[in-house]
Length: 87
Image (cartoon, rainbow, N blue to C red):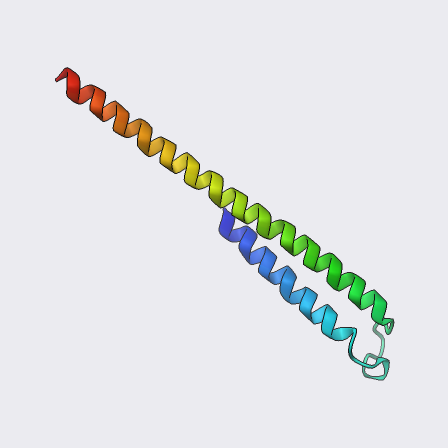
């Protein structure tokens, strides 16, 4: 599950870089596109912020998956020890 968040974060970061680069291109090279550089920078900042949020979500999801896996392994090991003591 966390891999999906990482992929989404990387995609949004790439789009943010592309939008940031578009703010540096002169308006004569952008026929039919918004020529306002501040608009491109705003979109880039928004995409970067959302990408960072999804990266944080990916890290947190991976962290909780690891905790769940370790607690499950500890529970199974404790059950095996208890059953070994009885037999």
